[in-house]
Length: 135
Image 1 (cartoon, rainbow, N blue to C red):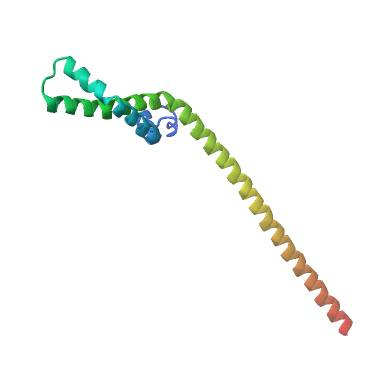
Image 2 (image 1 turned 90 degrees about the vertical axis):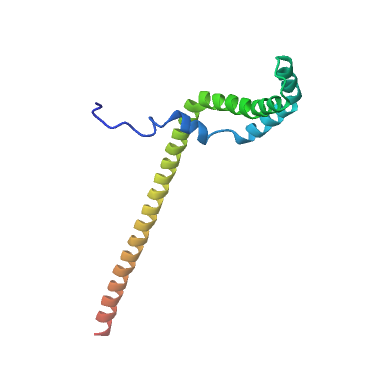
């Protein structure tokens, strides 16, 4: 049992993170390249002894679809630590920027309050001066 709860960012599921950052554009390109080499894959299945035409087509289509997905998913799994580090740096930078923005807003509000208080004091002094001048 841990004396403190684990941070959710450190223990997020690697597989889910890899799915969220899966390179869809590269997937389309890799499927296109594999599709161009599909006649070679079809002939390979014919040479290893698969005689059924429908079975060769099904195996070729599955190879064209599955091989690029598995290859890119594996590459993304390898990149997950770098993706996680970049996400943490982004979150830290965003937090710093937002804290600076909040500080600037608080300072602007404080300056406005000071101006209104100064105006009130000046108005009160003017009223007092006007009252004394009228007597």
